[in-house]
Image (cartoon, rainbow, N blue to C red; front, side, top):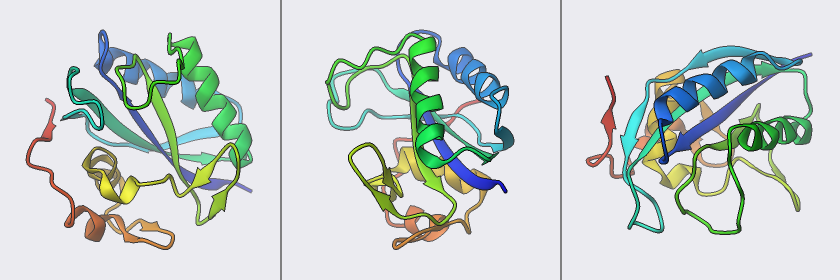
Length: 161
């Protein structure tokens, strides 16, 4: 039985568009993962540490038979395959960032994974791409993506051609 999961993608170092496209293809080729949709690409301002290049962000929907922690492991391995080094710096520049945002309607908070992804309802760089996929998507305990998007500032974000 498969579950619909939402994954956020982003980066701000190197040829990000090419890397995000390649990462999407890589994920879609993994056993137990079927690509169900992908958003447009967005240029978004950095979050947290603002003295860095703008990010390119997107989201994909996948149907997966993998349990949530196994899907997280695939995401982390994909980041490493594409040159991501996790050095402990939060919100810093990165080649590739893959976040498991939603896993069906699962609510989970353990040492490795929190679902829905923490603070996703506050971040335009997450909500804009998710709204492309499904503005009616329910974020458990927080509301629908389209409604959440109305409450965040999107003025500095732009759809990329």
